[in-house]
Amino acid sequence: MELHDTSQTTNLHSCYSCPRKFRTELKLKEHMEQNHTVRDFTCDLCEKAYANETALKVHKRRVHDGRKYVCGICKRVYASREGLRYHNKIGIHTPDNSRP
Ligand SMILES: [Zn+2]
Ligand SMILES: [Zn+2]
Ligand SMILES: [Zn+2]
Image (cartoon, rainbow, N blue to C red; front, top):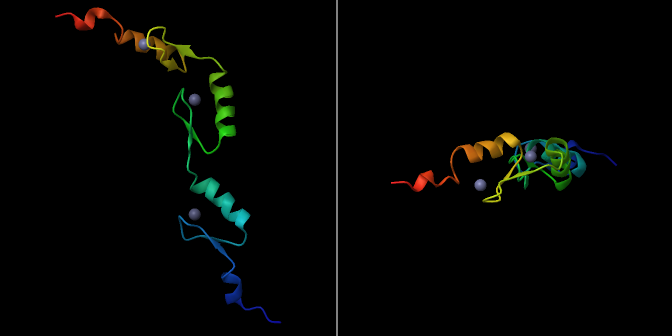
């Protein structure tokens, strides 16, 4: 039995997003993850996005260390004390805004 080059190319898995082709589905998957990943998991504290829940969880634990800075008035959550401080500083909850 002879193997022609053409029969091999038909077995290749081609990427949906770019012209690259891969021998195995796993390789294609790897490539997709590294190059065309849809980042569906967004951090609610800093808006960084990740491809999977685990990565997001690791990020949260690492970056935010489980700590949250919550505004006591509108319950907005901030990743840092500075963020919350700024939120209060810009006068969102100060009645001065409604002064004529
Ligand atoms: Zn690709
Ligand atoms: Zn974050
Ligand atoms: Zn607030």
